[in-house]
Amino acid sequence: MFARVTTAQCPPDKLEEIAHRILTPSLEAVKRSPGFKDALSFVDTATGKIVMNTVWETEAAMQASDALRKEVLGQAASLGLVVVSTEVYNTVTRS
Image (tube, rainbow, N blue to C red):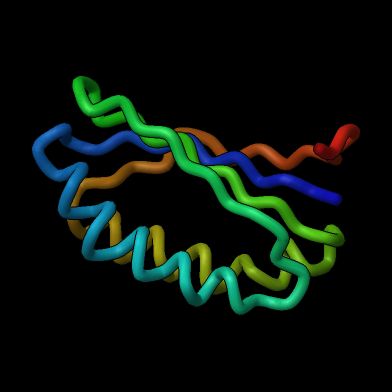
């Protein structure tokens, strides 16, 4: 399995709007993507830092989700979200 970890920054006062208007509704589309396994996000409400994690069955499934990911992040960018980094990992343990 593969995991994509995206770290982003936004104005703290826009965090709730970005989460509720864009990220949360978009998660439903991501969940329907072939090969999707799991997603988990973390936020620091004081700083506006967001860490978004998605887990995929295969690297190909993760790559196939790139267009949707770029669309979602583009929408969030209109509200001030800036992607700081994106990293990809192979998973080595499962619960």
